[in-house]
Length: 162
Image 1 (spheres, rainbow, N blue to C red):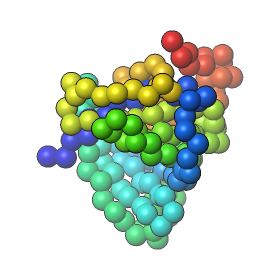
Image 2 (cartoon, one colour):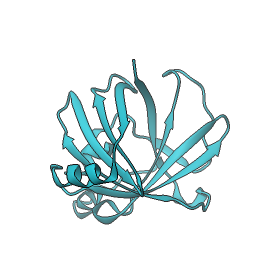
Image 3 (tube, rainbow, N blue to C red):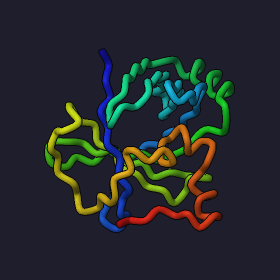
Protein backbone atom coordinates (compact mmCIF):
# COMPACT_ATOMS: atom_id res chain seq x y z
CA UNK A 1 0.00 0.00 0.00
CA UNK A 2 1.35 3.43 -0.93
CA UNK A 3 1.08 5.75 2.08
CA UNK A 4 2.17 9.36 2.38
CA UNK A 5 2.81 10.63 5.90
CA UNK A 6 3.50 14.33 5.64
CA UNK A 7 3.55 17.31 8.00
CA UNK A 8 3.45 20.92 6.78
CA UNK A 9 4.69 24.13 8.36
CA UNK A 10 4.83 27.83 7.61
CA UNK A 11 8.34 29.06 6.88
CA UNK A 12 10.05 31.98 8.57
CA UNK A 13 11.77 33.23 5.41
CA UNK A 14 14.74 34.99 7.00
CA UNK A 15 16.37 31.71 7.98
CA UNK A 16 15.93 29.64 4.82
CA UNK A 17 19.21 28.75 3.10
CA UNK A 18 19.66 30.30 -0.34
CA UNK A 19 19.64 27.29 -2.66
CA UNK A 20 18.68 26.77 -6.30
CA UNK A 21 15.10 25.64 -6.69
CA UNK A 22 13.02 23.87 -9.31
CA UNK A 23 9.93 25.43 -10.90
CA UNK A 24 6.82 23.28 -10.43
CA UNK A 25 3.47 23.68 -12.13
CA UNK A 26 0.53 21.60 -10.96
CA UNK A 27 -3.17 21.41 -11.62
CA UNK A 28 -6.09 19.40 -10.30
CA UNK A 29 -8.35 17.09 -12.27
CA UNK A 30 -10.35 16.27 -9.12
CA UNK A 31 -10.58 17.97 -5.72
CA UNK A 32 -13.19 15.65 -4.25
CA UNK A 33 -12.83 15.64 -0.41
CA UNK A 34 -12.20 11.88 -0.50
CA UNK A 35 -9.65 11.91 -3.34
CA UNK A 36 -7.62 14.33 -5.41
CA UNK A 37 -6.09 13.77 -8.83
CA UNK A 38 -3.16 16.03 -9.70
CA UNK A 39 -0.87 16.51 -12.67
CA UNK A 40 2.54 18.03 -11.91
CA UNK A 41 5.31 19.28 -14.18
CA UNK A 42 8.92 20.08 -13.24
CA UNK A 43 10.91 20.68 -16.40
CA UNK A 44 10.94 17.45 -18.40
CA UNK A 45 9.68 15.42 -15.42
CA UNK A 46 5.92 15.00 -15.11
CA UNK A 47 3.69 12.96 -12.82
CA UNK A 48 0.07 12.03 -12.28
CA UNK A 49 -0.86 11.55 -8.62
CA UNK A 50 -3.98 10.16 -7.01
CA UNK A 51 -4.29 10.89 -3.30
CA UNK A 52 -6.86 9.57 -0.85
CA UNK A 53 -8.56 11.30 2.04
CA UNK A 54 -6.23 12.46 4.82
CA UNK A 55 -6.55 10.72 8.18
CA UNK A 56 -4.30 12.58 10.60
CA UNK A 57 -1.11 13.24 8.62
CA UNK A 58 -1.52 10.05 6.53
CA UNK A 59 -3.22 9.28 3.23
CA UNK A 60 -2.98 6.91 0.31
CA UNK A 61 -0.82 8.22 -2.53
CA UNK A 62 -0.19 6.75 -5.96
CA UNK A 63 2.17 8.69 -8.25
CA UNK A 64 3.18 7.79 -11.80
CA UNK A 65 5.62 9.34 -14.27
CA UNK A 66 3.92 10.44 -17.48
CA UNK A 67 5.20 11.86 -20.79
CA UNK A 68 5.51 15.65 -21.06
CA UNK A 69 3.00 15.72 -23.95
CA UNK A 70 0.42 13.92 -21.78
CA UNK A 71 1.07 16.35 -18.90
CA UNK A 72 0.41 19.35 -21.17
CA UNK A 73 -2.87 17.84 -22.38
CA UNK A 74 -3.94 16.93 -18.85
CA UNK A 75 -3.06 20.43 -17.62
CA UNK A 76 -5.58 21.77 -20.17
CA UNK A 77 -8.26 19.61 -18.50
CA UNK A 78 -7.60 20.94 -14.99
CA UNK A 79 -10.39 22.54 -12.99
CA UNK A 80 -8.76 25.94 -12.39
CA UNK A 81 -5.54 27.70 -13.19
CA UNK A 82 -2.51 25.66 -12.17
CA UNK A 83 -0.43 26.48 -9.12
CA UNK A 84 3.15 27.54 -9.71
CA UNK A 85 5.86 27.32 -7.09
CA UNK A 86 9.59 27.02 -6.71
CA UNK A 87 10.61 23.95 -4.69
CA UNK A 88 13.80 23.67 -2.69
CA UNK A 89 15.15 20.44 -1.17
CA UNK A 90 16.94 21.18 2.11
CA UNK A 91 18.65 18.38 4.05
CA UNK A 92 18.41 18.81 7.82
CA UNK A 93 19.04 16.14 10.44
CA UNK A 94 17.93 12.77 9.08
CA UNK A 95 15.37 14.21 6.67
CA UNK A 96 15.06 16.35 3.56
CA UNK A 97 12.63 19.25 3.84
CA UNK A 98 10.64 20.28 0.74
CA UNK A 99 10.24 24.05 0.83
CA UNK A 100 7.70 25.56 -1.57
CA UNK A 101 7.84 29.26 -2.44
CA UNK A 102 4.52 29.91 -4.15
CA UNK A 103 4.25 32.24 -7.14
CA UNK A 104 1.48 34.17 -8.89
CA UNK A 105 -1.79 34.48 -6.95
CA UNK A 106 -0.22 32.46 -4.12
CA UNK A 107 2.90 34.65 -4.01
CA UNK A 108 4.13 35.47 -0.51
CA UNK A 109 3.29 32.02 0.86
CA UNK A 110 6.18 29.72 1.76
CA UNK A 111 5.52 26.24 3.19
CA UNK A 112 7.81 23.40 4.25
CA UNK A 113 6.88 19.71 4.18
CA UNK A 114 8.56 16.74 5.75
CA UNK A 115 7.71 13.15 4.85
CA UNK A 116 7.88 10.64 7.68
CA UNK A 117 7.83 6.87 8.11
CA UNK A 118 5.19 7.09 10.88
CA UNK A 119 3.06 9.86 12.36
CA UNK A 120 4.93 9.73 15.66
CA UNK A 121 8.43 9.73 14.11
CA UNK A 122 10.71 12.25 15.80
CA UNK A 123 12.41 14.87 13.62
CA UNK A 124 14.51 18.00 14.02
CA UNK A 125 13.04 21.38 13.04
CA UNK A 126 15.34 23.98 11.49
CA UNK A 127 15.18 27.51 12.95
CA UNK A 128 13.23 28.67 9.89
CA UNK A 129 10.25 26.38 10.61
CA UNK A 130 7.20 28.21 11.94
CA UNK A 131 3.70 27.13 12.92
CA UNK A 132 2.41 23.70 11.85
CA UNK A 133 -0.45 23.83 9.31
CA UNK A 134 -0.78 20.11 8.47
CA UNK A 135 -4.48 20.02 9.33
CA UNK A 136 -5.46 23.47 8.00
CA UNK A 137 -7.37 22.91 4.75
CA UNK A 138 -6.66 26.39 3.40
CA UNK A 139 -2.96 25.45 3.07
CA UNK A 140 -3.65 22.34 0.95
CA UNK A 141 -2.39 22.86 -2.61
CA UNK A 142 -5.76 21.72 -3.97
CA UNK A 143 -7.44 24.46 -1.90
CA UNK A 144 -4.88 27.10 -2.93
CA UNK A 145 -5.87 26.44 -6.55
CA UNK A 146 -9.38 27.82 -5.85
CA UNK A 147 -8.73 30.17 -2.92
CA UNK A 148 -5.26 31.65 -3.50
CA UNK A 149 -3.16 33.17 -0.75
CA UNK A 150 -3.42 36.69 -2.22
CA UNK A 151 -7.21 36.60 -1.67
CA UNK A 152 -6.58 35.98 2.04
CA UNK A 153 -4.38 39.07 2.17
CA UNK A 154 -7.10 41.08 0.42
CA UNK A 155 -9.44 40.01 3.23
CA UNK A 156 -6.75 40.73 5.88
CA UNK A 157 -6.57 37.02 6.74
CA UNK A 158 -2.81 36.58 6.59
CA UNK A 159 -1.17 33.63 8.34
CA UNK A 160 0.39 34.19 11.70
CA UNK A 161 3.80 32.82 12.62
CA UNK A 162 2.98 32.09 16.29
